[in-house]
Amino acid sequence: MRGKILNVEKATTKKMLDSEVPQTIVGSLGAGFGDSFNIEDCRYDKIIIFTDADADGYHIKSLLLTFFYRYMPDLIRKGYVYSAIPPLYRIIKSDNSSVYLADDAALRDYRQKHQNEKYTLNRFKGLGEMNPEQLREAAMDPKTRTLKRITIDDAEAAEEALNILMGSEVDKRREFIDANAFSVDLTSI
Image 1: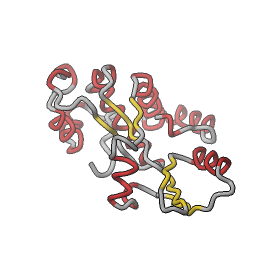
Image 2: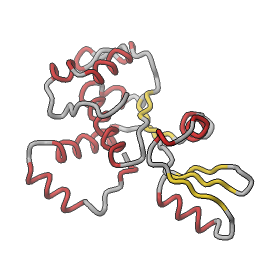
Image 3: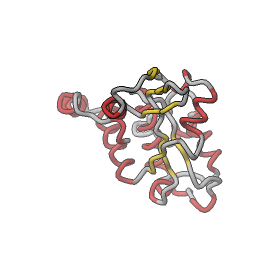
Image 4: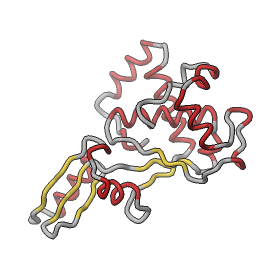
């Protein structure tokens, strides 16, 4: 999938079904949607949301979680939905081995523990900057990737944030942004 999925929080079911990305997801999973959703018909038992580690990536992840929460909540309730945690940094050690770090906190921790070590630091702007080997090693290989199982609480938090941030109540959005702009932890969703 490229780009952002339709904001299903504001869209009608008809508009959602007329949109390419939701159509593709519903068709790929093969289990229907809404009242006709049947998890027994789902073609997959693990659905992994994999987005860039930036604000756009978190927005896309929130939109997808809202879509699943609204139209296929059993996927979340039964533990089928995961979020891949893409690395933001790559440490290349002097022996040419690599360590991938998810965020700034992981980088600070690494620097504290390896103060006397020589290494090269790369920061990824997005998944498209990774070469195929790096992407496989950091994100696709089950032995080395980091996955977080999405819970219904995660989906509800994403849905609530989208409702505030993408909904029609401007005052509610402004209050939320004023109160949370400097304390939001986007890695938790």
